[in-house]
Amino acid sequence: MAITVWSGSLVMLRLGVTTSLNAYDLTALRFGVAALILAPVAMRRGTGTDRLGPMGLIAMVVAFGAPYVLLMALAMRTSPAAAAGALNPGVMAIVSVILGRMVLGDRIGGVRFAGLAVTATGIALFTRAGGAVTAGHLILVGTGLMWAGYALIVRRAAVPALNAAAIVAVGSAVFYLPVYFVALPKQLLAAPLADIVVQAGFQGVLVSVVAIYAFNRSAELLGPVAGATLPALIPVVTLSLGMAVLGETAGAGEVVAALLVTMGLVLILAGKPALRAISTHVLRGLGRAGQCPGR
Image 1 (tube, rainbow, N blue to C red):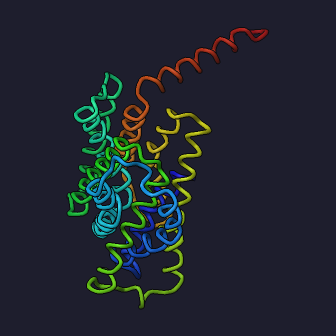
Image 2: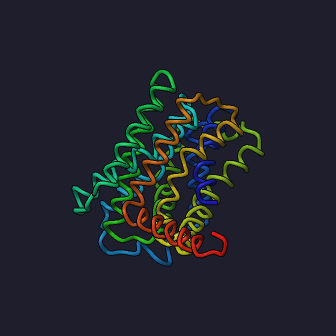
Image 3: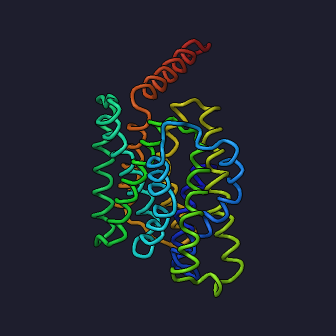
């Protein structure tokens, strides 16, 4: 559910900016609705940590709040949803590993280094297969950098996921909505009511609340390794949804590139623990099969 919603949000952003709404409208709908739902969480739990400080709070809101979503929506005007599904999480994963090594002293290791190489190859191939590089592609690389910075802040300060979501939603609404209503171009009043309701429900409720809960719950049920590997499905799922919902086309090169990014993300996110767990599971299965009568 979490991966479908996250991938679907990219498709919905692309659908919104190519039909009746603009990027500024979509950003306002997302954080206006999310802030209403998550404001009680922000008031009750606060930041969840004393280590963020004012600059940390501002950095979280900028890196993964209204500026991030606004840039994503603007990128969708000139790039397909499949490009966002590959470039955004791919760049995020690569930069996150590098920042983790530089700032937190994480060990990369052979498996994750291989994942970095595979992901980078997939991103390069996707860009080449998709034709000319547009401004949207460059923006998506930038949003991947922003997402990685947000992830580092949350990890370093140990902010719970729901608290972080509430901080980003409420902070974005407080700072972005006044600017939107006063100064930014709007198509909201002229858009069909159905489009507004669908985007508000998807971006504000499903993405900001349901997907976060589903992802955290899946990690509890499946374990941290399997749970952390789930975002690796985003490139392929986004590519599939873009073809089904938007009628986007994908050549063999783009399909191969999306699969490479997915494989690379699996290696980066899971690393040796996942490979060890998979190997153990397979070996145990083979052992049980070998003990069956008639084998």
